[in-house]
Length: 342
Image (cartoon, rainbow, N blue to C red; front, side, top):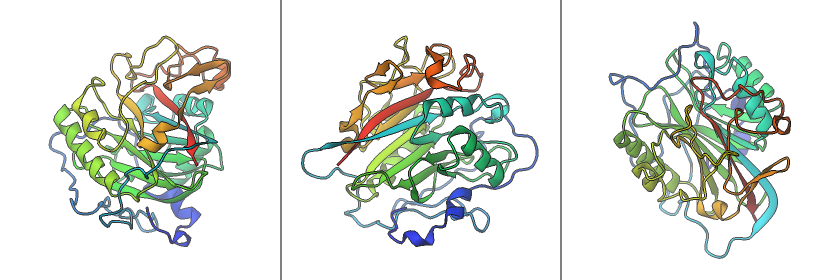
């Protein structure tokens, strides 16, 4: 990430980053237990996750690490362009803690994101071939992606999938949990600035752990090159929109409303629709260019929380089926649209 030497990244490397075949049946997704070893985070530079097998191509982080390489917005007014960017965040794992039951695949296909920030991405035998098949089914063969490493049955990796070219990508260590990493991609979106997309999955245990993860993310985002756009999203496991985790993230990203809701006006995203677990957050210049999410004749000014049990008509999001959001392990997808600044 942050490298200007794009030639060193081959298409094959982008497709197989972090993909390690894992034998045996997938276990249901869960947070690592209290005895799991905690990863460490270097406070001076963005750290890399432990290296996957040879050829995976995971980078240690941005090349731009001097004191000026921050994600603070550029001076001057923001001019929003005409190019649309749809970002979807989704912890959509279904039965068995995998995407094998195709519910999440249908939802992602129906929502048609340009960039997706996914959690708990396990599919088939977790090989590179299986992961490519998942991306093809949910998005299409022209999309590129990075998924975090899988080294054992308890790993529940994050992923970034993009319609636009991924120029650079990799993993940062999550300082509070051992079975997943923060996954990032630098994406060549239309316009003068690249987009840094970061997929995360914070802990359920307590707000103190989530704050620690949020502080690590703030430190990492602050080290990204100035003038670039940032979206960070995923399963934050936040119990309310006033949680201090969001106050921390608000140092570098916009966490204020209006917030995404479903057609019934409910903005909560966990399975029983009682807590706002899932988010798409943007840096200030990009958030200034937020746009209503339009699907068919419907328009959602603050973004959409998608629940197949509520949304109508489902024909507008084909091939989604009515029960696709009814998995006991699944959250609701969050959709936000932007027009890219010029």
